[in-house]
Image 1 (cartoon, rainbow, N blue to C red):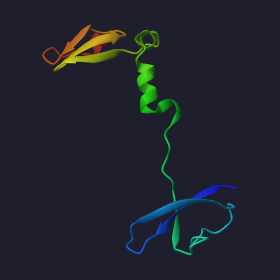
Image 2 (image 1 turned 45 degrees about the vertical axis):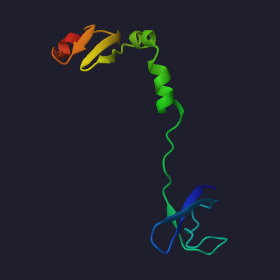
Image 3 (image 1 turned 90 degrees about the vertical axis):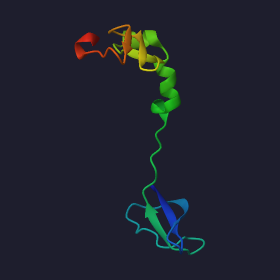
Length: 107
């Protein structure tokens, strides 16, 4: 059976406590909390973006400059105000604010 997320409807209209409950797909949505009888509404839960694509996970993956280069990526790291140094890939070794690059420079 699927698990649904509900939220208690508070008197002031603000979101209340959330809870989960298993229900059949064909069961009608709850209108009241099964234990406290407070009014509730079914909500769409927040998406959990975990796994390989979390910020900490990506930081680990982009630290390996040799791997990025082998996979065809170019990596620049900020070296100062408006100055970026190449660490992996194709393109100029240095990019500065005073001397912008063209797309053809990255080939």
